[in-house]
Image 1 (cartoon, rainbow, N blue to C red):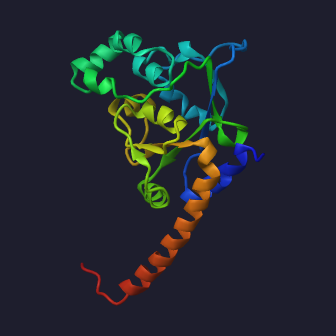
Image 2 (image 1 turned 30 degrees about the vertical axis):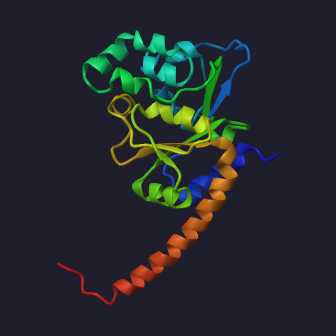
Length: 227
């Protein structure tokens, strides 16, 4: 079986990614001990960017400062998420309603640990996270027109991808503030098992895009540029 790490380079190349893909692996086995502990973070999405460079083994406590994120990742139930003071702040602001919260995607099981790491270091991840530009989103949508544009919160793209759906998020105000995600970037979660097929479709789409772009560039020469 080909290791998932083998798909990192073609994925970066075909989408022109500016950042390395991140692999997410869920484990339901009893958590093993680990050396030291992670620095506390405001939310699980804050592990995404550093996981481009290093492997991070997290537990439920490492996600506990964000009730909504803990819910999307299966670490607490809806009742626990709804009772959080941070969730109350989101609802009181009108950012999300209790009814909307009930529709948020979440993992159908409780993982004992969640590993975030560069895709190049992964073997059998469940989900792959990438950061998209508008141009790379154009390419991905051309190859996978059934992708889902996800509503807030941003982190629900992870369980959606675990369940087999390519999910793109324009970001959410909470996660962008916490992670510093640039305004010109979006996030996308891919089911890891679908990577070979997705890359094959992407390569076909890129070839077609290049062909029509070459035509458009040549055709543009017939016209006078408006000043």
